[in-house]
Length: 318
Image (cartoon, rainbow, N blue to C red; front, side, top):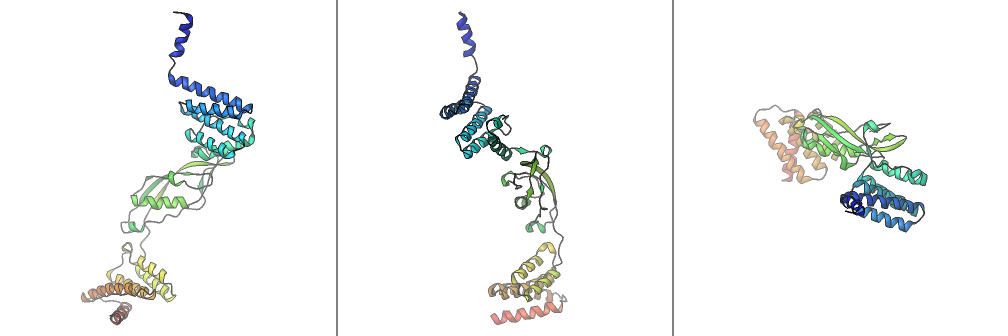
């Protein structure tokens, strides 16, 4: 076998991936030289070839970074950002150095994209992200009667503006799936101060725990009394909301108090001009009232007075 053939065989036996990787790296190196020489078209051709021949992620990352440099030199900051972002989305921590020697402004463009894509953990931060205002969790009304409580463990990403990215919210633990949507709404609407590194805001990942407990039951009689005061002030919608709360089973209203609330609720519907709803509500309340009196329950004078008024109004309507 000739020496020439002997030397040729090892080259032929190189794995195709290694050869392709080498070709992509060569084309990126050529593009860098073309950019330095101001040969934009030839640099563009070399980078197109580098992307086409890229086999590994880092081949594509290098090609996108230098295409970003090329676009910046062409005068398009928007396309430079676009290509830097493509590189960073493929690999968020590429070892890119020396952009300052080309242009300090170019290095800042790259840095802003880097900080916008890279997510830092709490241990990397000089200043950790923190709540700007304390979050307010609204306990789901549907769960109040079940009195479900427990811990929720959550992980989120806070961007450089201090906003939680909705798609990044992870509810790692919750006592019931009904808590998931209210927790997400709370996080999206609660502003943060972003994390900082070297005097600049960065994206960061946060994990925290909430103790979810149902609100203490309210006195339904007090709520009905408050609703009557709201009606006197012609705050009909507020009165209806308060009465709905009084009738919430989580507040443990007795049968008599429920009748009391329903009678006032009928008055509220009537004040709102909803006579049909008022008639239905009065009908339910009076049925409950008659059942209580049939069982010998001693009812408060105010309840008897409201029932008499509702009975007259219902009879007049009929």
